[in-house]
Image (cartoon, rainbow over all chains, first blue to last red; front, side, top):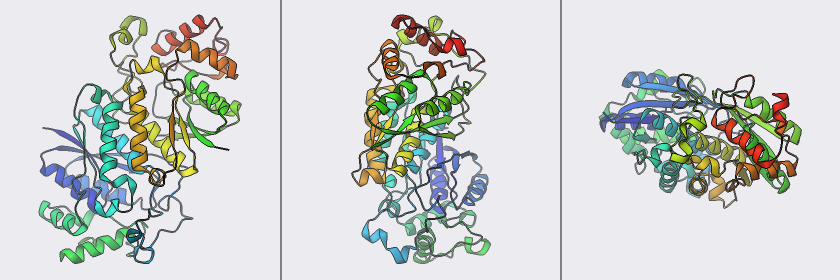
Amino acid sequence: MKKAVVLLSGGLDSAVTLYTAKKQGYDCRCLSFDYGQRHRRELRAAKSIACFAGCALQAVKISLPWKGSALLDSKIKVPESRLTGYAAAKKIPSTYVPARNIIFLSFALSYAEATGAEAIFIGAHCQDYSGYPDCRPDFFRAFRKMALRGTKAGVEKKKIEIKAPLLNKSKVQIIKSGRQLGVPFALTWSCYRGGIKPCGACDSCFYRARGFAQAGIKDPAEKVM
Amino acid sequence: MKKAVVLLSGGLDSAVTLYTAKKQGYDCRCLSFDYGQRHRRELRAAKSIACFAGCALQAVKISLPWKGSALLDSKIKVPESRLTGYAAAKKIPSTYVPARNIIFLSFALSYAEATGAEAIFIGAHCQDYSGYPDCRPDFFRAFRKMALRGTKAGVEKKKIEIKAPLLNKSKVQIIKSGRQLGVPFALTWSCYRGGIKPCGACDSCFYRARGFAQAGIKDPAEKVM
């Protein structure tokens, strides 16, 4: 059975990505990161989702002491999507963490290489890449090329694909696809602020709520959060 | 003053790289990693070298629980260079750590981006890249391209160079250059085995000893180690 490493943050997108990878026939190992994010409680969500899906989870703790992001630095305000409108202006939001996906994919690459996995799944999608540079298709292509040059697996012509199956999907499509795949939405956590309940105002909450509303599905997480 | 992030392992090569970066006029911030390496004592060396050079050091602790290398897994033997002769056979040695330099450079990239540094220095050189895929010139080129695609700095056309000033130098040339630059060789640590004294038999000890012998310089670290 072909193996894959799946980056699992605990959010809705990465959960759908995990179930997509499983549907494609991969034996999945999940990877999540405690990187000092304010919404660290997403890690509990990742654990529950991996457990529910019957997959192993490696939780790696890293530190980014230089911060440089609203997700790491409590002095920087988490923006409210509807007020800042950065997406329309194609500005990179303050929730961007310097080189975060590059770091995450590098660890996934190490894990994949050490365990003979032939694919890495990441839940990036078009709503993200309008804002985040490390969610764009040409970034993933460049990462793959670099990975081929810089690893033993690459030198030995072993395949390690970087797969972003949600890349061209909207939040509505992701939610609809997740429902078909049986994703446990109730276990996912999206809010950037990481309080006891979702704030309902940050980008992540906003896009989630709008996605569920447009899909005509009630967000089951609302009940349990 | 232009800023740089310098990957400082505590070994001879990274120490010479730091002094080269300083000589080139960079304000240097060093970055070292505790990644579970058996020669963790190199971290003490990194601290001493950064202190001696008057530079700040960020020490980042990461875990690679999947191991996959003789440097991480005590069950895998550290090869003895003169016996295995992998370099001549162009085989990748068991001391290769899956995606290690990719991970290190990713953190350096994050640090550089968060602090506005315009260069990352790494002490890779030709003796390494005969064996390690993540020490080859085409890997560094691919990493740079990927970094431009995947960071805010890249999108904003800010420069972050990946500099490997020792890339085409032999160990003898590195040692001679280090002496001219005033590198505190006595503070550096090279042995992969990380015991109380250098083992004298691993690749790293072997190349170091041969380099000093060929340069006609006595290794000052021998006195203090």
